[in-house]
Length: 359
Image (tube, rainbow, N blue to C red; front, side):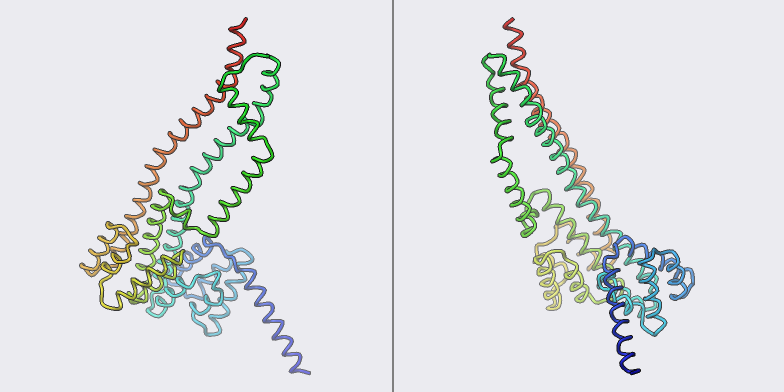
């Protein structure tokens, strides 16, 4: 009976652990970055790992409180910090855990925590910049199209009733406006628009390369890949991981299969004896200026510092590119839709001008 009771207790404990892991499976990257910063600061102040975790536990929310308590209990039972983090792969990414494991082995866990925190902060900032660059033109376009749709569907039908009572020949631009209003308000047009939007969303979702082929998006994607590669490789090299293995981690961090394949080819060429610069040139993945900075790092023997410099240079290029896009795009959009609105207004008021001239 005791063995059966123990078996049921063990099964209940495993089920509770499984439910707990599912509960914390979506720990936000911002919270993880904050945890790395707090733990690094406490370790640098001279506190032990368990004392630091105990202090952070009291600062966290209920779900994260339970997670950190579980980490603390694992360390008390003899597991290393990195081994405890591996219990939750969807909370702590494998790359960060690998870097922390190397820092833990070399006695530089606090420095490794700082590097991991910087990595997460840079990646969040880079994603924010990338999506901000895409969202602003899209929102401006949708807002302008919404104004035009309101005019065609809401205002023009009201004026059409008045035009029919005037019994005067309408100008060509007004006839075109009425025809466009009828077309937009028809059921067939609405169905065709919905189908087209669904097809476009489906194509972009299933084949993201279509989105990446757009001129502005393609440049931003290259900058994103460059900065992510430079930061990941500099972080793993600073943690003492060899270059060939660091390239594997850089490939794992790639967000598309094609980039991952090219970075693995770069790793294979480095293993065969090619320099990193030659391998990156053969991959044709990064810009010439970016590769030149890496070449200087290889020649001087300070590749980690030059990779960080290449990362900051890429960030400046992103900001410069976005500023040029906004300076060019915003006035063009405003002028275009201003012209459209003026054309709509004149098309509506031309019949009134003719009516006034008739009297």
